[in-house]
Length: 382
Image (cartoon, rainbow, N blue to C red):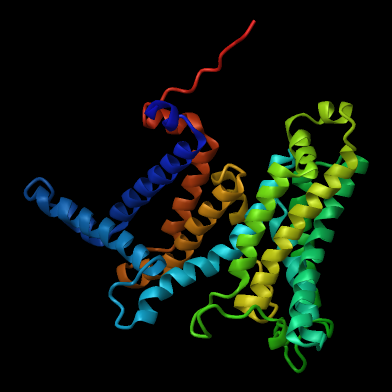
């Protein structure tokens, strides 16, 4: 029973994360000045080296915990719980975009265009949030809907090109990331989006009537977008596992030729897959512009589009797995600053951990070899 569990996808994902943190710990120890100094007299006092390694690694990961989950050193209850709210604030757009990537991956389309789709969602939602004046009950849902439609539109273009010309979605989505980013830069220098009397590429603030309400007050960045994210997790699970459309998506991912023989319109399904994926990424864009940011800038998508790819892969394209992976990556982002401020650990170490997670997720045989886990044998029937 234990061996079967260890050979499963969930266990391999957990072990991949564990190994990545071990590699990160090694890098923290090697780059720590105290460890390097104690290493110069290792043979005369080896315990000093071991203590220095322990202090460096434990101190770094303790700071990561205090910056991402619970700050037990804070003097107020608000300060204690602020780290987990920061983790969830980061996890919200990452998970939303990761769900979009998971939908496309499950459908056999390797969508690399999360960044561009987030940008389009943010632009559409931002324009509505700035220029439309309505009560919150109308303005807010209209701005969110505009963001979802913006991302869906940009994603659907990729689906149309794939369906009509056979264009490779990897190349197209990568190029579309540049198109979206450069278009945003241009529009932020024109009256369409740029704030009046401002030379910087930044928009006017989003009207309060279009913003996600804060969950615990203005002192925290966490907003009601987290509830939209949880709803999106459930909707994607239902779509992929309980709906006819989701069955068509999964059939396309398993075998496009067989799906075509079964009567599925392949071209239309390509378009729908990319529209759904883009809409989810656009929802992530609304979380940014209508939630944490409040103004359009050229960095509105940050690195969430590429983090979403890793989150989808780590979550094995399962909505619940994507949620768990999104929270993990949100925690890494939230705790990185505390690691650097209190322990002097470069933020790049967190990026290395994320990269190692990608490496081990992409190479399950390597994880099995490290932990001496045999691959599950497939029975062959006559």
